[in-house]
Image (cartoon, rainbow, N blue to C red; front, side, top):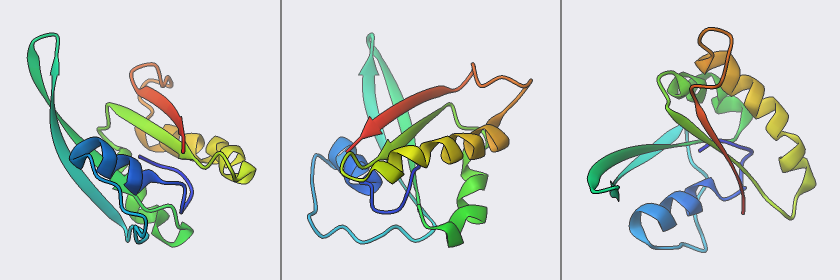
Length: 114
């Protein structure tokens, strides 16, 4: 999960993995992660989902977590237009650290407004 600070990345992660919601969710420091097993066509699939901090001061730390990713969820706040506009920069960062063979086609990208 990546995007600007305060867009709801941690809340999305908690809802998906623990089916809970905290109204006073603190900002993520660096990175956090959760694991969830799901059933896909009769097979158990284990997802490790990384929640990256959106603050600029953590960019060098969080960018290393893009390497080896099989998917990225770009998150923005539907009430803050600039968080949507900033997704272009987030996508460039994802491309820089995950791009193999000059194409993002191997990586699942998902856009999520909260």
